[in-house]
Amino acid sequence: MDLLYTFLISISPLGEARVGIPYGALKGIPIGYAFLVGWIANLLVFPVFYKVIQFSNRELWKNRWYKKFALFLSKRAKSKTQNSIKKYGLWGLMVFVMIPLPITGSYMGTLAAYILGIDYKKSLIAVNIGVTISCIIISTTMYFGVKSFL
Image (cartoon, rainbow, N blue to C red; front, side):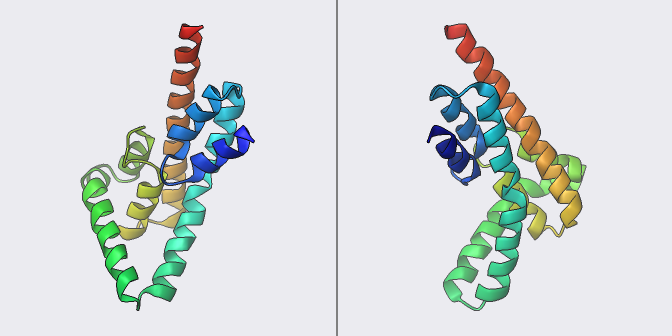
C-alpha cells in the first residue's frame, strides 16, 4: 500500500517525486524502489498533463470560470519560467524542473512549455531529464540522510 501512496504522491501536483520518494523511504520502502516508483510517476506527468491542457483548452475555453483560471495559471507559469527559458532555452526548462523546490517541477515545466509554444518532443525530453536529475538528488539525499541517522 505504501508503494501505491508513493506513486500517487509522486504523480500529484502537490508533491511530485520530491515528496513521494521521501515518503516511501520513511515508510520503510528501500530507497531504490521508492526512487523507481516516484521517478516513473513523475515521468508520466508531462505526457498526461500536456494532453489534459490541450483537451481542456479545446473543450472548456468558452467557460468563463475555466478561462479565468487558465489565464491565471498561464500568467503565473510564464512569470516564473520565462526569463530562464528565454535566456537558456531547453536547458533553462530542464534546470527549472530539476531544482527540487516548491513551484518548480514537472507540472509547472509542462505548463510553461505549453504556454511558450516549445516543441512537444523537445520539451518532453527537457522536462524528463530535469525530473530524472531531481529524483536522483532527492533519493541520494534521503539515502545518505537516513543512513547518517542509523
